[in-house]
Length: 366
Ligand SMILES: *Cc1c(COP(=O)(O)O)cnc(C)c1O
Image (cartoon, rainbow, N blue to C red; front, side):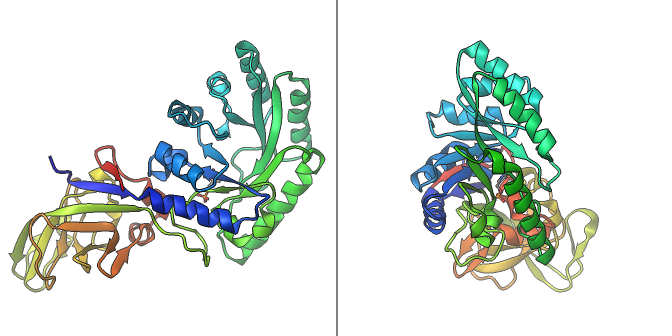
């Protein structure tokens, strides 16, 4: 049975992106490949393996269950769980040999209890909130409460401290804000910096603030080929999304197309139906605004995107036939549509586009 639409991941490109980042960041700085959310939709296990081949030293995931998935695939590299430890998951985290993130004395206690139960040593990184307002200790007092608990723990070792930037890809104010976050981070980690990994840079900061790299950087979106700020580095998207034409017809002027009759033809149009819809994760908001590629030419979306299908204008695009490939994201001939393009039509960011594929969309590797 032929798939209605597919996401195709090129792991060689991903590995090369990691090599490029590795070559850019100075040797003393480790690189952590962020493979949370199923490797930003590229497949966590395959992405992690490719990133490690490309020179990443560590991995990051969002939760213990994401870390467990990597361990079960025999990935032995150090893995940091970016989400705060939970009482329920602490033990599985220790069992899987994951590095968990702590930001309260209670969290340290959960890790210590789990380590005692399992008779196993465990590592944690201290999360510091310097201006993101998400998780982390916010000042010296909160930091010291965690450190005190760590000091009393026999089986929990502090091996890192990190913070997350809120606006590293922002305008001038974002740059100032990031510098301020960095200063706060340096200040709060000064007394504990010996023997631990300090890290704060996400993709935007890796490119924009190389001087903030410290002991490790955390590369997410850039690894997948979508650096969020301008960079001279050759980083390329590694995911394409392709569907097919299922039907072609010519319609006279004055014909409505799709739900709500938001589009009405002004002259004769040649219309193709595409085998993808919002049920596959194609953003409905891209309806009437977005484009796809056929034989290297742009075709506009006509009217609203339906659950399983949408219509496009192929007037003037030669030699189109039922079964032809439709590029939703990727290169076709000389033209290319990126996840950023689709994001701009749908009013979102590339991250969300990469992650949007529904379960029924098959993912294959090249
Ligand atoms: C997701 C995440 C990253 C990666 O961010 P990118 O912008 O994709 O590079 C880094 N650090 C933390 C804490 C994150 O949650």
